[in-house]
Image (cartoon, rainbow, N blue to C red):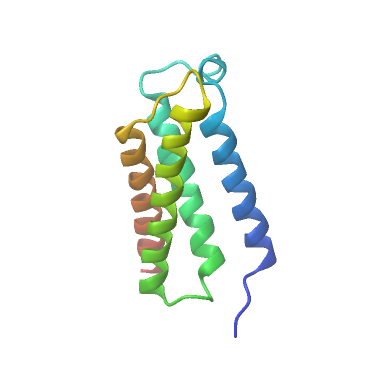
Length: 120
């Protein structure tokens, strides 16, 4: 039986905490640093591409490749959707957006294709 690499457990947990912090942090404070249209969509894409890459590394020896990507999709979908709902409930400056969830899933797809073409 394989065990997960401790390094990727730590990196993945850190990445999840990073996403949690940025998702629930007041958006008016984040917007002070970056100023361009749809900046949050690019952030969602990058955060969930990074999460998917971390999960791919974490599960590389634990789950078969086909099932692994289905599992990673489910994790990113659930985390992204849950955080979108929580944004509307726990913050005053953020609202849930289906487009944010869409860009979360595009981030997942970028990671999937990166891993696929990297093997080729």
